[in-house]
Length: 230
Image 1 (tube, rainbow, N blue to C red):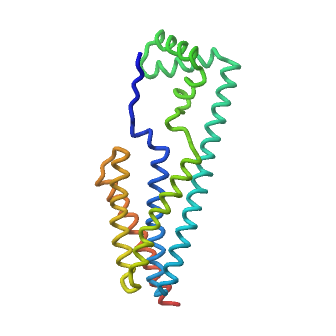
Image 2: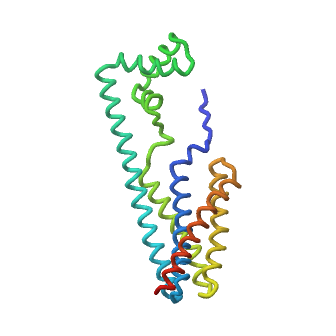
Image 3: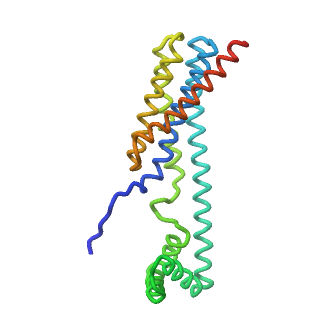
């Protein structure tokens, strides 16, 4: 029989989550940093230096954070597979009944559930238990390198947008120009990422812009208050 391969939205979750989070954080954190520092009436050189430092530090932090967190997930998945392999070796009859019970609970009668479990365990017992008992598949397998690279790259790209606006904007209009451009970029990011994941584009755009705008408003308030004090 010819193999039929379909492309599903869930196959993108490994890199899409890290990429969207990186781009969103890049725009929000850098724009908020620029707005906050600008609201404190700092010189243009100080504002740009703060933005550049935020870009570099943020990209490295995102890469390290994604790598560590996804590596922890991968370690947990491997530990579960090792444990499952030991259980299959020590008590394969119990594991067979356990798998048959899963299929019975999904709607198969007892005889058919046992027959399916036997066939799948004959083919690849560990893969059958990993998929149907543990919920682990190749599609959703944790990939630390992929997540770290996607997050760092998209953070840098996202952070570069408000930073470029700040470079070509005067200090007097920097807060408004960076905020407006960042809000537009966040809306586009929310819409594109929602479309890539098969979700509603309007909801995705509104969700991202709301929290991004709130973050920029909060940092602008802090910068204004402390700038006045200083």
